[in-house]
Image 1 (cartoon, rainbow, N blue to C red):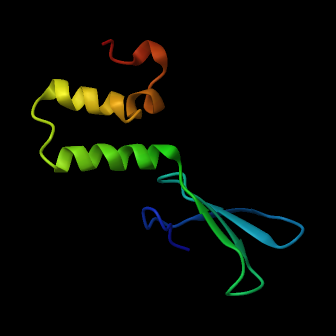
Image 2 (image 1 turned 135 degrees about the horizontal axis):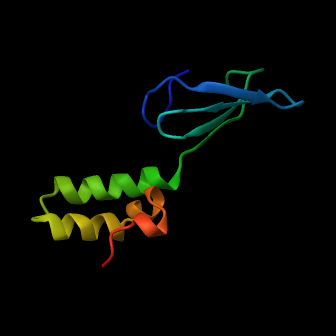
Length: 94
């Protein structure tokens, strides 16, 4: 099954007693639950907050808003990307 966020192949991570199947994407972390009994059944998708944060950063970057390294660094901080990928002692100090 393809990930609805990044199109990578999702991995099955388990089935509940009610038949609800869970899948996880190892590339982006998206979770998907699916009712395997019916095509029109339950299908819920949850992607990590970091996906939203990265999409916001990419929008800033592609709009030409970021002119220099300071603005790039500020945008990474503004969108919460740095706090999501580094422990506090490894974050850029501002």
